[in-house]
Length: 214
Length: 401
Image (cartoon, rainbow over the protein chains, first blue to last red):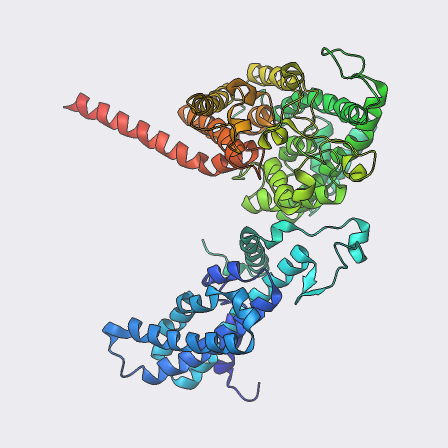
């Protein structure tokens, strides 16, 4: 990356793997559980969080020297809430069906620990450009996990990807279904999201022993 | 001696390499190893893990054989080709034709269960470098006995892989698991493929394929019938002897009781858990009977069928007896303290009947009750131990004062 210095590039690449907000910091689990039954919802959620976190980080970073520390949480909440409402309205205007699928979970981005966490831990102490990169990196790290989980859940649970049947038709018995394959109803249920996230954590930590905590 | 010495040589040759645990496992499983203890304390105990597991498997074999006969019996009975059996030694039950159907359908289940499960155990033993443990031997036998006869083999394979990896290996293998692996496998099947695990078409061999054709046969379990408030057509004797549709090996309460006695006298299974589970189930059954008698629940209620079942019949129907004897007593996932075992068992019985009655979607509550109590077993133990500590502290204080 010629554009970014090595230190800046790490802001984006670290959260993708060794400092992933979901698998290492174990934040934002609720949404990983709630909206990963379909790939499309997971992608939209990731993009929404990317927008909120990147812009929010910049805003907080710009204001970091004038926010009184006693009321900083309230200020942070106002910033997230404003951004989330923008996202919500945009979704309602341009992707109404999808916004119905995501229902309250768009609104609940406000309470996503990753966002408050990055504001507190990074944006309050860093300059806007670096905060922006940090926001992008963490949102991408979050999105990658969401999309991986949703990929497996939708593929195994419903036999579709982005709503398109990829394994054949379960009712007409074509493709894999002709061989007796059936969709795994358990994958659609919330517990399976946790188990899939758990498996990702397991694989990641057994590949990189340094990540294992005592 | 040929195979034994060959295995021994292989073991010596591969000592310290990655594959060593695999050879060791085959060797110890088949023979007594040549090695003896060299130093340290020499404790001789008869009940090692291998013996414990073997005793349970021996207790399960009658259930398995009965299950094979029952598979064929239910099939031919439903299609009207044979007479209903009267008495335990009825020739229409113990017929060669019945056994053939059973062998054809049940043996593949056993083979898949052991094949997939042991393969995963071997893989993990090789990766982690520990010995292959005997833990799966019992699980592998339990699994085919608690699934419907027509379950597709690939589903069973997927479920076994899931159950062994997520239910056991992630926690550190045999002896470290929180949940009973066999029930984890069944729960996975139940939630993943509900159409193959519940309803009235899965319990009798061939019923699913014949559904909708003129030859369609019905094979509802007693629990299913009761949950829909229908009249039960099976006699109490049939329920006790096991001539009823159900999962492969859990129908015969008689054989399960015999197995339970065997386990209790060989001191492998905990009589406290078995007894307290039965008491818990009876207590809940009595409460429901009481509600019906007090006319709180009228005949029109959707719970009426199961609530009005005589309380003691709850012990005979469904998988309650099997779950209590073989799975609630799993020494790894049950409570360890004696007082804890009473609480743990009682709650299993109590919750089983509660789930059975109030959740028509899950006609058999014993699986969920045991899994739930598995999770709480350490908590129960904790409070029992703390209670004991507190009592002794008090005693000490009065003595000192």
